[in-house]
Every structure is written in C-alpha cells, then in structure tokens.
Amino acid sequence: QVQLVESGGGLVQAGGSLRLSCAASDDTFSSYAMGWYRQAPGKQREFVSVIGWKSGLTYYADSVKGRFTISKANAKNSVHLQMNNLKPEDKSIYYCATDTLSGNNWFLTDGYDFWGQGTQVTVTS
Image (tube, rainbow, N blue to C red):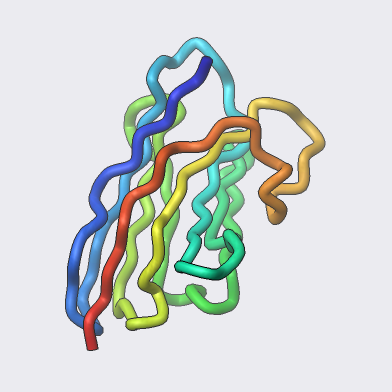
C-alpha cells in the first residue's frame, strides 16, 4: 500500500508564501503523475496542479496559475508545491495524490489511486 505524506502547511498572511512537500512511503512503484488538490470546508475537492512524471509537463487550475509552481523533488515519487502571493481564498486542506496507472484523467479525483492525509493551509487577510 502506497502512503503519501504531505508537509509544509501552516498559517500565513495574504501575499505570503508556503512550500508544500509530498513524499511517498517507498520508491518501489512508478508514478505516471503526481498532483495536488485542495478542499475547503463545505466544498468539493478541487484540482490545483499536476506534473506528468515522464514528460515533466505541468498543469494548473486557473485560480492558481502564475502563483503556484509544482516540481519534482529529489527523491523518487516526491513533489513540491511552491505557493506564492497567497490569498485568503487559498485556505484549504491540500492533498497530494499519485497516479500509478496509465490512461487516467489527471484533472479528476478518480484519476489518482493513492492520496495523502492532507495538510492545512490558512491564509489571513
């Protein structure tokens, strides 16, 4: 069973930055992609960003484009999410996920087969 662990969440003022990290429990599997989603209270989990593992291609939700950057970490099956110019509406629990099967739609939660427990990001105005 693959386990993903997120870290780096916290409390920050609007305009500030945070860097989230996601690490897998082992490196015996291969990811086709790793993505970040977020979920605010009372709302559905929404796509934030994804990186294709072999291609390196990155995709972002319009709401975070130009402010967030996803990148591979040095360790296998690990990613970072650099979040700059944070806004109060970015406040959510952020989840990391991995797609270990090919042909999935990375823009849907069904496109991932393993998820982390989430890390809280709070942005004050």
